[in-house]
Image (cartoon, rainbow, N blue to C red; front, top):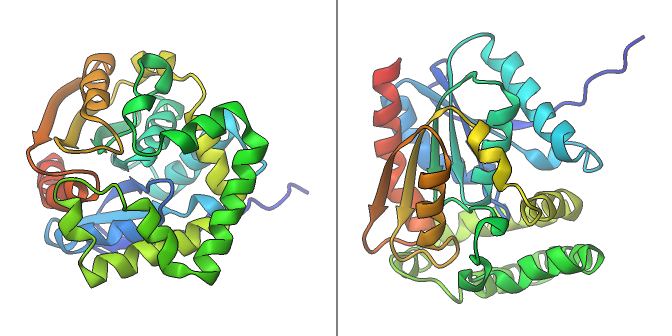
Length: 277
C-alpha cells in the first residue's frame, strides 16, 4: 500500500471558483499576507491560493521540497493555466517552483523580490544582513535564533514586530502605524515562528547559490518593486530583470518600500492577470 500523501494546508482568497493564482508568502511571513488580494480577486474572478509551507515536512528540502509544492499546485489546478505571485523571500520559492513545473506557469509576478546573494554584493545593502550571514556561516546557530524568535512571539508578541520594522523606510513607516496591518503581521509572525524548522528551511535555501537556475525560468515575468525598499534593495530588482529571460516589465514605484509595494500593486496585478483569462 502506498503511503498517504501529507496534506499541505492552504488559504484561499478572492473568487471561490475563479482563475487560479498561487501566492507565495514571504519568510518570515504567512498566508495571511494574501488577504490584500481578496477584494481585487473577487472583482476579477481570481482565486488566490496560498499554501502554508510550514505544513510541509521540514525534512523535505531542496528540489524535493519545490517539487512537492509543484505537485500540489498541479493537482489543484487540474490542467488549467496558472499564474504565480511571489512576495519578498516568497519570490525565491516561486522561482524554484516555477522551474519545477516545467513551463506550466503562464505568468510570474515578483513583488519586493529577493535576488540570489551569489549574484552580487547585495547582502550589505539588506536590512536583515546579520540574519542572512548567520544562516550562511552557522546554520545551527541560525536555527537557535529562529527558536528564540518563536519564544519572543509567544511571550512578547509586539517585540519582534518592533525589531523587524525598526528600519522601516518609505511608506512602510506609515503602514506600521496602521492597527490592522500590525495585527496581520503579528499573527503572521506567530504562525511563522511556531514552525522554526520550516522558517529556517526557506532562509537556508535562499542564502545558498542559485543564480544559475534563473535562465531556465521561462514564464512571462513582471517585477514590482518599491524605490525605497531596504529589505530587498532596488539593485536586486534590476538584477532579476536582466537575469530572467522572459522578464518584459519592471515597475519601480517611488516612495514605496517593502510591504507598501505589495499593498499598492495588488490591484494592478489582478487587473494584469484578468485579461489573460
